[in-house]
Length: 223
Image (cartoon, rainbow, N blue to C red; front, side, top):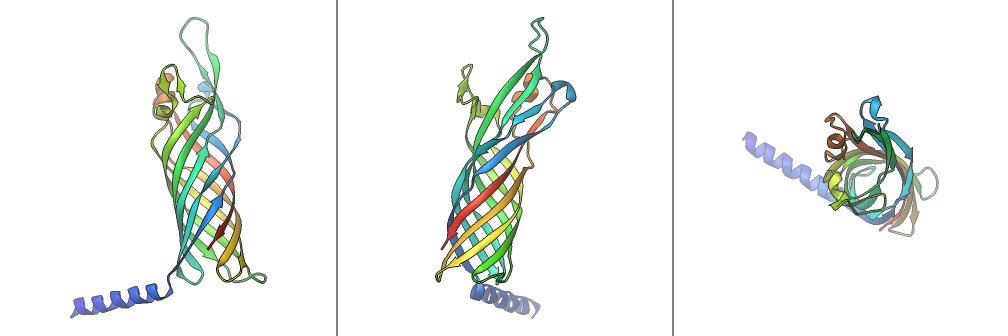
């Protein structure tokens, strides 16, 4: 009897969910100011020399499960990384030297976020807020604009997977019956170490880690 009630309740919830659920798919371009954060002892003098402007582009999807709530996802190709410097002692008797690496790592991002939408704040205009994260897979990488240094692919210096937190918001504008334009701002904070033991082994310190950060301007259209 209890199983029958649970089955009926599950069926009711599925039908209710399906009756409302709708999906909006769109295209997005996302220029991003990217940088890096470090976990390392002060003696290595890790510094971010500057932030870089890199590009993200891809497909986004909002799956609405209630009038003002949606599950936001998609597939985004995004480049991350910045110019960093650190102190390295080659043990050649000449003392420590400062080295600089301009890092550029390309990822395919899978966002997993919750999006909250307001009611209209002006004719055909609403606000949205987005919170969640993304799971990212490395596609390629360059260091100092080179794919190979000293006979080794620079992509091997970085881990295959990355995870980050996303927090953002923006505005959507309704055009016609089903077309929407949107513009927003999103903060990306890397959670996982992207260093595949390159810097930790070079400096003989397993406690070194390197993480991505960035702020993106998101522009797109949904259908």
